[in-house]
Amino acid sequence: MPIDAHQRVLSLGSGQVQEQHGRHRGPRRWGRTLLALTLAIGLIGGGLYAAVNFIGLDTAAVRQKCTALVGSTLHTLSPDQASNAALIAAVATRRSMPTRAATIGIATSLQESKLTNIDYGDNAGPDSRGLFQQRPSMGWGTEAQVMDPLYAANRFFQELETFDYGSMSLTDAAQRVQRSGFPLAYAPHEEKAAAFASALTGASPSTLNCTLRPAEGAGSARDVAGDLKAATGKTAQVLGGNRVRIPVRGKQGWAIAQWAVANADKQHTESVSYAGLVWNRSEGHWVPAATSDGYVVVSLAGTGK
Image 1 (cartoon, rainbow, N blue to C red):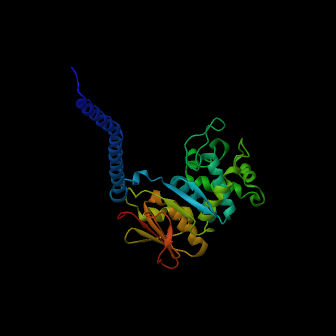
Image 2 (cartoon, rainbow, N blue to C red):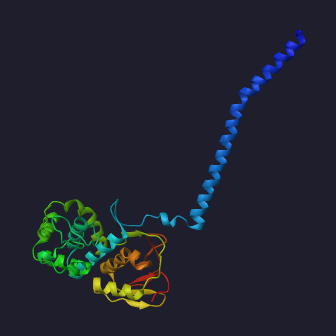
């Protein structure tokens, strides 16, 4: 069909408009999509923030750990490892042995069992057990005894006391006690062991901290008092409000206070206060506070028993 000039012009104009609309359709659609994604991400992010900060859903994601600070270096153990390190240091202190002995003990246990009270050995020592992998067949005690951390630590230091360990390298001293097939294996643990030993013997005040989730149950003031007596020989006074109070001063006070922090996970401890500072479970570190002069005070979760 013939088309006059006027129709050709109208047809050409209509085609140009459609082409221009087609060109803009893609970018506009992408723009709307990006805007929608941005809004969605903002809503999700806001929801997560609210969940973490107001509902408390982040507690399960907290990585529980205990740390000891030396200079600018932070050394880390799990709460269970820190509790065992605290026991080893307490036994050394109770036997009137120096921080160096506690360092040797902690380093030895790190190598032998990763500071864990394990109930199995290896090919070299199938009957090895406990924190120090002591062998009943080699005269270290019965299996039940070497699986008792308090006995095992005392037995280790009983052997260490028989020679001049203070004049020896850590790995040589540990090897003389353990008689291991890997005599140089203890040395790599010395720095970490020294950091925790220094805190747990009271030589480095307020340098041991633990980051913990909220306590899952109530603590027992009587149990804490019993554990403290067994490890350190110190007597704790059981107070109302599920608390214990230990009369102590100076370096020994910091040894007891940091022993309590290292055991906070196991004992369901909420706070430990001493010498103008308090460690709070909710904060995970020592902060200034009003404290009872001459006492370490340990406050536990729940009403206790």
